Length: 355
Ligand code: IPM
Ligand code: MN
Image (cartoon, rainbow, N blue to C red; front, side, top):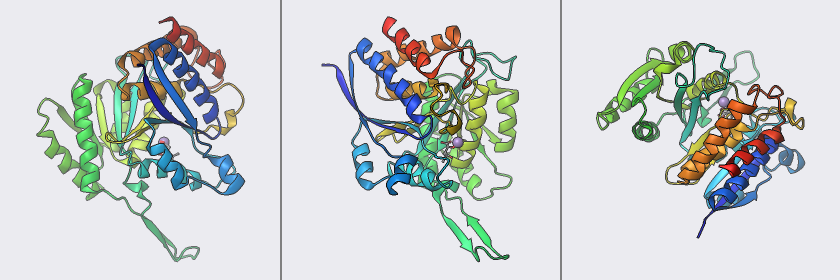
């Protein structure tokens, strides 16, 4: 009996539907090659639906998604909707309500890919950022005082619970051990300024490190870490950090592996349904032009196979992605690939079937 997975699909906004279409095309190819069955169910949440009837993410949809084996998401964000409405009302709500407390973002330079760090090669850029995904500055705790007056005050609190910090750091240690590369885990925080939250992160990090004597540990302030990611990316294996810092440093991670077009990601709760999404946004300026790179979405589908335990399928798909990067694409950037979005999907699907 082939495994049968129920996958919730949220194509979302902008170029989201275009890249998700390619990810599904590739998963159908995987399905034919590896005797795995997927039942995809699409959910129309996103900017268009919000503009039409004011709906964001109804509880009914969350409940349906919770019952899926995994969720694939394109991008959320629409130029005609005020910033923050869709992000907090859909994307963050999904991450929070499904308790997807780990945001896993690999940074890897594939052979043939060009990085602005020209003298670094594949192997020098190969690390994973584990971003806490449900609290910190993203918790939405705060408020205005005297809003709209000359004396107005805006407070945006960073919420760090012992439970939230601990489960994320524990996940990072265990991930680092299983990855079995350099067995080196870096904590990224700002202990010289964020005296309370970074102190909590630092103490918990030290505490849990005692349970993992085989993992070497390291600490970097976030600003210095940004510099090292560019100057000496080879020093990193796994980095664990809070929600806000993780958001910022993974955009640097995206560009040093060739751009947002290749940067895949996963939102994980080890005990629940995980959600896989490329880390870039909805890129409205490229919408409908068949020029966006679908490899980040396809790479996210690859992470989904890995997460579902489909080792062979995941490894076939990874090789196909690497082959396209090596042999077919001129660049990983939108509009400069030398191929259209759909062609890139066809190429990957073709390599999967030929594998
Ligand atoms: C990301 C994005 C989101 C975030 C936005 C769209 C809310 O930048 O996934 O990195 O800040 O988490
Ligand atoms: Mn981001």
